Image (cartoon, rainbow, N blue to C red; front, side):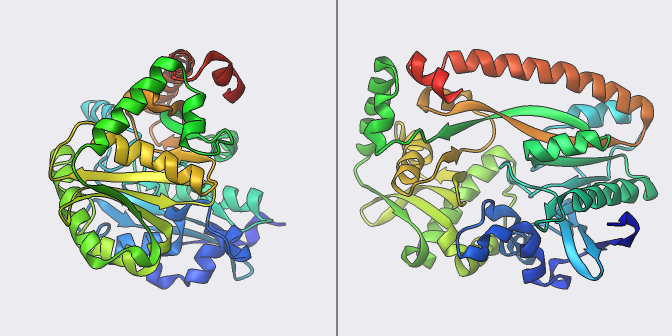
Length: 395
């Protein structure tokens, strides 16, 4: 196919793109009636962010959705934003921004291909099946050209897949390797089967933590679909506000975002609530993918020993095993997850910097950082909770 036939467009709102066209690139696997691999790049999730005002004017995330068309048919799309800060990204470039500005440049605005506020790996170059090579090429070239034409300092494609990272590297982008902690289902029948794979000491620790958590004096429920009611979201909003104010100063997401998720994605979420005397005191929100349970937000109004571990990690593992999922991604950072069965896993991003000298400096930094991350993953895996033979099998 002739690359010149492809037309690249930038849309200011998903309202200008039919949902069926976007999802034909974002989640073509749902044509069999199943779940999307990645719920976060679906039209309904990204539209909820936009419609709720969580992204857009005044947020530092201004939508610039990138689309590619061949003979009038959308063959590719990317959730792209103009950023005026580096908040809500979770692959941090604050030090780059400071260095760039100390050298007399303006790091912001920059372009970001990402799912806002969502450190979950998945495709970022959303291409219709059969058009992978030309679609990815068109999106990358279009994004770089847009950045260059508008004198933007840089372009970042964060939490992309390993395959996308390799394709982007071949196209001249810089590849960055970071890490998260993911739990992998090794065919466990139940939670006890998972515990049996751990060393004796770690197994006892987890059992003790679960017992401590369950002693808070109430009940824990995992709610999804029609079981979710408006009062559950009212409770979770209180939890989210508490966490957001402590971590970020103010919450990234608006209250109406959760209402829109309830209206359009109730079957795609699991809300784990701890309730006592008819009142929710803590909760953890997860999104469901075809193969993965994605842990996203947690909060509480009362603090109880190990309740955070129970709601965020152990309940997620339990739910994933019961529903045949192969992975739990529990969000960014957190070496404390290692002792609870979550092993270090490589995550990927791609970067383009307009200034050649600064780009060379970033490239050298990324090479050294990548080697350090790989070494850390190897060391942390050896310290993991699994019996030695179990760790070798998972590797």
